[in-house]
Length: 224
Image 1 (tube, rainbow, N blue to C red):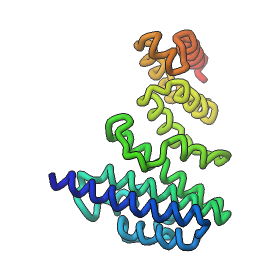
Image 2 (cartoon, rainbow, N blue to C red):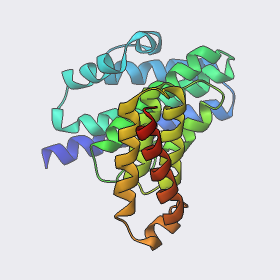
Image 3 (cartoon, one colour):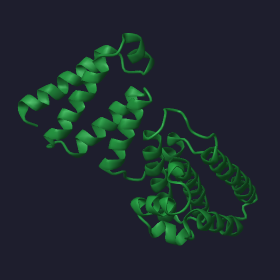
Image 4 (spheres, rainbow, N blue to C red):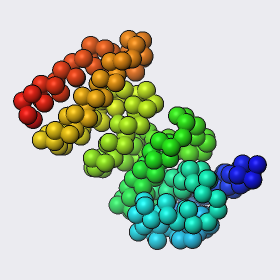
């Protein structure tokens, strides 16, 4: 009960803060929105937005674990993800492109990690969707780590065509990496164990799965 009350109170406070921030954004009062975000970051992490921007994702997670019950880490991470997305929007409005992309990328990584630790689709409504953050990062180069996280997320959520797209971005970037080829082969083998209906619903019918598997097996045989 204590855990539930703590989490509910934290989520309620976040929703109220988001309402204030979104009202300021709608009125294009960007400086005031930044001040509001600074206050929320300080409450959550003990650091303002500029310091948050300098911290790595590991450092941010460590800060989240310093205060409050550790069993609320996932929910605190989702709140941080949401604040980072809002900070990215404010930075983008101020044409601080690099700062906005940094916020969006940290938000995406933290969100993917949090989603991987919980039940699929078990996420408060106020938290940004993965596709919302991907769209915000459109045109920005993403690392292999990001695509690997996206691939695993899409497979877990049954979005197999998107998972395959992420896989081939990885393979194109590291065409001489045999471990990635094996990784891809195991992906296709897992999909072949599913029903035709499931594969078709995920826009990756069995024939395409078999074709992808054959292509990677041929790469392995050629030593690519």
